[in-house]
Image (cartoon, rainbow, N blue to C red):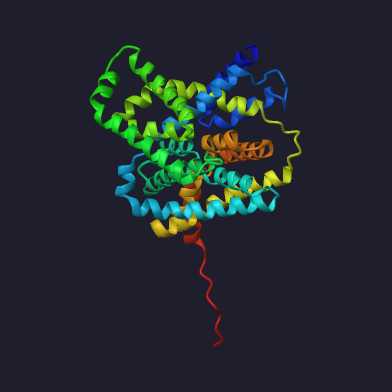
Length: 379
């Protein structure tokens, strides 16, 4: 219990510092866990209490992901979403998978690393657009579409990798049946749900918390991945009043997710033989691959490579979902590799998101001032 309290106190201090400096807190929560845990001072250990709160953080993160799915917006802009999303998927998944496989990871591990390599941090991307006052830029909409497409790909990936030895067809049938039940409940019970959310007592918060945990518990009984069930619940509730559900679920998500990140760092073992050169190479490739996909997307969608620099700057950071993939399915070496990648890209991404517009203007001005070289002619 003492270690748990120490970890929370350290995270409180880090939250105050990162908010003041306007930098992403996730890498610092992980670093704090590494420092306090088995790879550092060893004063904090993972126990049943920390594992419970960490699991709650992951569950509420996925619930928020479901609440953020706006299928009608995706359908209305499917051309832009598909074009930018497919470019982003193909470039980053391919580079991530090939790099991991060449460094000696097996096929499954390479796929997990590639997926974490591909998934940008939605929270960091949107936050950077808001804090840097870029929401009105035309590239901001493309960044948002990319985040939505990545969320859809992540859902499919979770469904496949969570299936284990189950028949995929049967699993998808069960998931479809669950989706129908949840959407039917949200549709026919919308008036009931709104009446609960409109109350000003403890009932809305209690209902939201109970709904998420009950859904996760039913998933275990039905042998359906709880990750899928919780995302489906969020997507179903998004058809009612998603803002109200976000408001009532946010305190749980914010607190539990901090615990999830710090104790992910606590359980990391950096003495397990991880190759620093390999991890450094993957971190560098993670930055370069987003630059490549950003430039291609900028040219295809906006007709400008400079627009791609803006897209790149706001999508470098990997974060919450990459760590979730590592925690759910990664071995110790995979988890360490992904964690370092998240730390490096988050820190680099906080600067590129802020200054990529300056870089873009600098390139443009340099191009305008560059002298024209005319061939000499003999007279």
